[in-house]
Length: 335
Image (cartoon, rainbow, N blue to C red):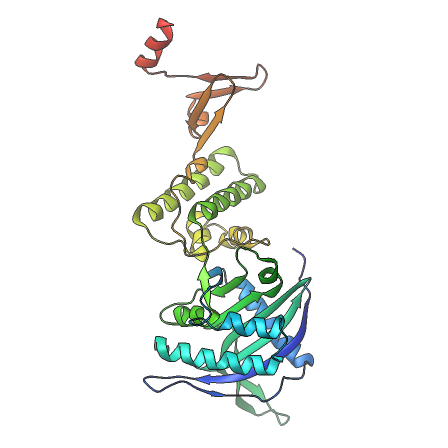
């Protein structure tokens, strides 16, 4: 997979405080940060950690800009050019504080706001990054504590593809799903409406699982076992109405090497979304073949090819069905 080139055009770092019942407060930087080597390394780490987290949500801006003001602020900065980047980031902090208060979120950390060119895509990034205590060695070789940004936790982060937004793409916002009270307040801050079409996303997932089975060059029994395991897991989620989490799929379906399957599921320009309930109609191709000709229709389980109930003869280009039920034999004999 080719590495996307990140070019930082604007960067500001602020700080957000909210704990318990106290209202949120912010420490604001007046001007944009200098984009030096340290800033570039920080942003690259942010992008890398965001990409590595597979549990993401996707969507687009809400239409109600009174209740969700971020789309209006983005337009004033990107289209109208009435807000410079530093002013935009401060207005965004106002919205963030309000959302954190109204949702009762317990969240504190440095807020990184960056505008980044990713190849040909112009993107606006917002992330809340916490601190952690690490160790450092002084010039006298003394060991001391030092604070550093902890990207491994990354409680809230979102990416707005400004190019996709201006093109009118179906979904152009991605954000970490998070847990507890983090995701709702941050999604509200982004002004994001989740666009997840269960049938469409399920079909995409089924296709990627099938492609993975082919690329691994598994022998037929191992391939069928994997696809049957996938069908069983997705069918269980669909029956119970439980939303799917992408970071769980690989561990459930391909526990031997989950990271390999996870890389396939999260790759591409249109990654799979988390949070949809699998459509049980769309998972049937995992365990069943269905085809039709001008004068026939046929559907059978994959396993029947190995049990002998269905046999395909390449040489004669024929498909032989065995163990026909009595009613079908009688119907055929009556013709």
